[in-house]
Image (tube, rainbow, N blue to C red; front, side, top):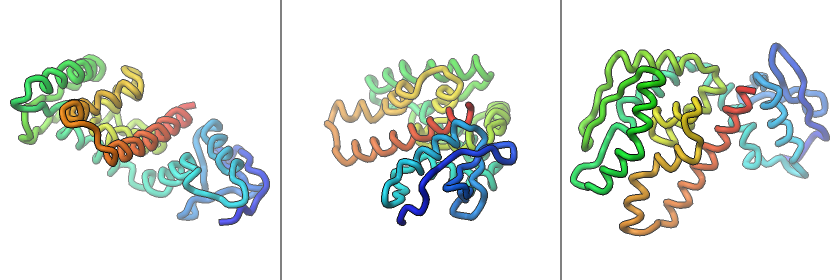
Length: 231
């Protein structure tokens, strides 16, 4: 759509911050107020609107898109999102090790076990590990602790955390990231142990690399959302 405003500014509102376009507050696609918990996040959104030229291009506004998603889709069903995330514990990438591939098994153990050890020390959550694809059911105590931890997130943090869990395929890696055990690059590399092993054997696939690059970019935008919402 054509740009219809000159200036994007930030204004305190309702205990949070909104973005004004020539003095008029932005709303989400569902017509809800675009109200954010921190000035830093609102400034990031305002900067995206201010950067538009003749046309407003949504694809160049990742933070605005993420905030819209939080308000319209995550906040109204936060309890369901928490349960969806906790369910990842039963299928967590780090808990399923390869069979009959000694080199890969060793790489998985070397890379992943420190995260599981950290989780046990940090939150008292001791996740079971198996070989192969036989489904695991983690303990009720582990699930309860994880539920309490994730339920403490506000909707903005919860939305970012959802991106980390689904992107890594691991609630453990996501927790390690947001609690500062490891940085994003290290967690990202840990999530790709299986792929890295296969690519060393068979080479890279350009389409897979492109898909992976898009996912990484989306997750880094969510990391910005996490940090801005904590500011």
